[in-house]
Length: 83
Image (cartoon, one colour):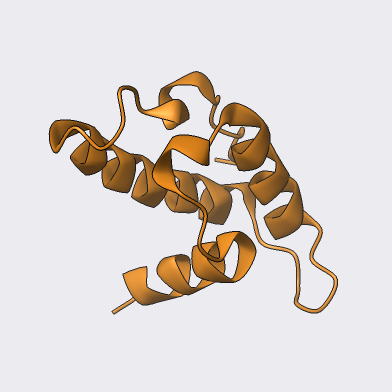
């Protein structure tokens, strides 16, 4: 399953960050980390957008369960993708 790789990358970056601590700044740092990694090949904007969609869905569920009050991904613009 391809979604596993998105989960793995977010886990490597974030570790055990509490849901309320995921803010716009942290998501922007994640985007930079994925676009300019030190050990792996940089990924495309499309791949980063898929990561953000995955994170957004997780945060949406957390909001539905009342673990958080808002989905921070709603405030982070998607990257431009090549057509």
